[in-house]
Length: 247
Image (cartoon, rainbow, N blue to C red; front, top):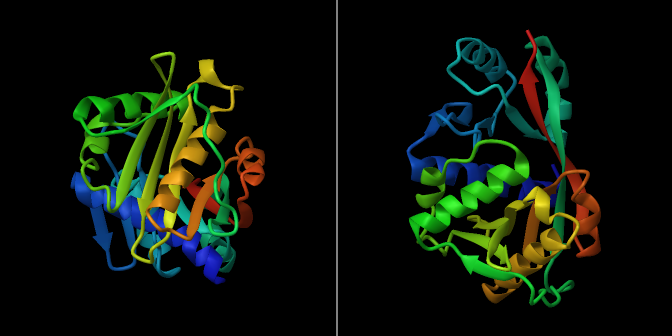
């Protein structure tokens, strides 16, 4: 696995583990980790699978309803695990493009003055973020889980954006143990789309990363988000693939 790919998947898996630990939801098995919150789809994942022998156990646990039916790999690992994944009944469900930006070579520009960005500091802020994120991605996000992340700005920063006083967009930064920054949950409510808010939120988060002395920043882009992040200077590396059980 190339170093850039390690940066991307390492930040994502560490981010999920951190959220799970803070919320008291993390399951750590010898060969994988998992988070299965009640009443929330985030972060509902099996991840950091260490070897193919774990796939049979994961499959059994999913069938029993004890693990979430969503197992995430970086592309190179998914390729090497391919035959065993298929044999265990897993098929690709969601594919995102892992991307990286070198901030010293690509410093962020200015943000729009039409958006008011706010660092979440209170429980009310956490629930506002959760509402925006849920509406943006069309899945359940528990504000109580988000609230457990606040006050840890050396590791995680949660932002919301408002337009004319109305909540409109969300974004989150996670700083991993390798010193890299990862952007997560960059979302815009449907009624505010097409106004450049995703690019504006990404720029604001990148400004924060620069201010905090980070050189690398990674994210995982959908097909819709790929052109936005490319224009901002992010470069594609490897895909991140989530598998679902089919047997």
